[in-house]
Length: 83
Image (cartoon, rainbow, N blue to C red; front, side):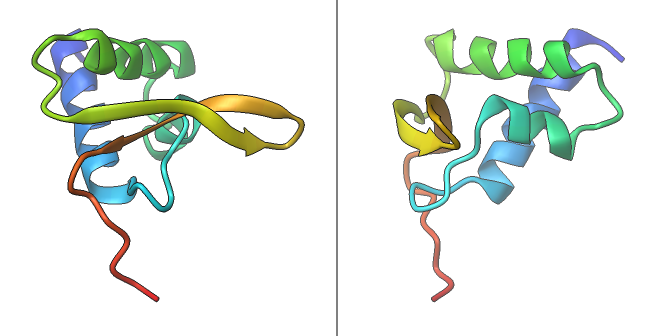
């Protein structure tokens, strides 16, 4: 598959599964896209964030998972409506 397809799939996963209340790491996005190489998916997520036309993708390094602070991603406007 082309790199554009991987970027599109990563964008789709972030839009569907990542919220400000429950953001995803690039590694978690790769877990949703297990048919692709892990490093390629992580690169796609980084590309989405660095691209000037990312469409509201937010990154934060404030989330602690395990023993380290990790970068997490979500799109502005994505909220967790389940309680």
